[in-house]
Image 1 (cartoon, helix red, strand yellow):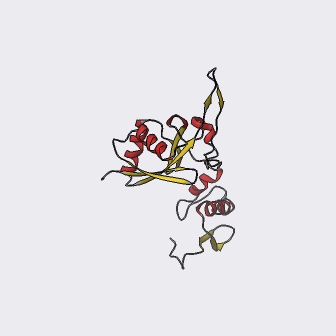
Image 2 (cartoon, one colour):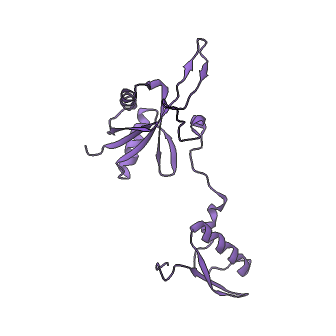
Image 3 (tube, one colour):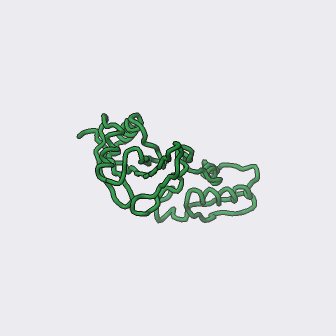
Length: 189
């Protein structure tokens, strides 16, 4: 069993645990899911999983399964949550798709609000405008072109982005000294 990953396949409010080995194929995963959830057929489901910053990785091919297995083994992760999405496509006689239903058999809508975008959904998390604020302060004694006024503004933004509170130890027209509010209580550096 060494090198095996547990795949927790979630469909609606039910979960099926399967074993994913280095030689597991996509069709193996689909057949196990469809044998447990009788209302599903392999050509009607889409599988996604989440790792670190990537919240909706597609699991469509044997290569995707191998990459999933290799990635998790390299990071010593032994389990992954796999979302089972029921597309429920119906094809009419002229070959056009009549409807796509992304709800599960129990009438619950899937958790991922962007799943209807399919391959066009954003792959990365959003970067907020405040993302660069965490780089505003890099060292003690750092100088700013705008002087203490610029430093005060950047300190507030830096503290907001990093998630801490501070107090001014010294605050005058030429120099400002600030420290973390939890410096003594939590030995904050």
